[in-house]
Length: 122
Image (cartoon, rainbow, N blue to C red; front, top):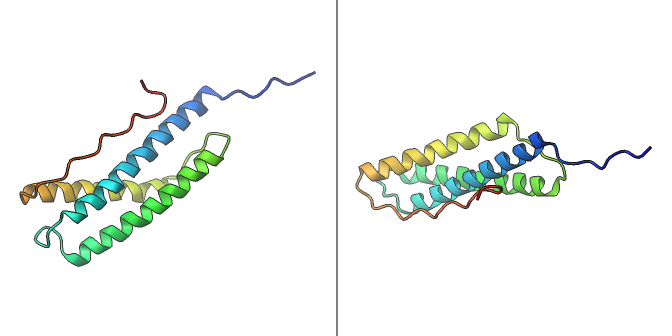
């Protein structure tokens, strides 16, 4: 008796779509953070703080690239642990705070790149 060929479970497809969208969102905000740091004067954030945030963003970008590569190399849907996602969420909040501080200081912010459409959405 032959077993049916495996087909993706609906939950697995949804998980893959959500994770792909989430990783793209993190990538967008981490990149945006680097752009904002380039526009940030000392009056808004000191040099040491900017360097620390830049290092965190660059590390997160490398971690994100690794997670994205694993996702693409894995034939089955995958998830990421909250221990991985929580620091990334905190970093996005830091980027949002930097953006708000720049706006309050009257710094003209560079235009944001349009977000790519998540896979599976039309």
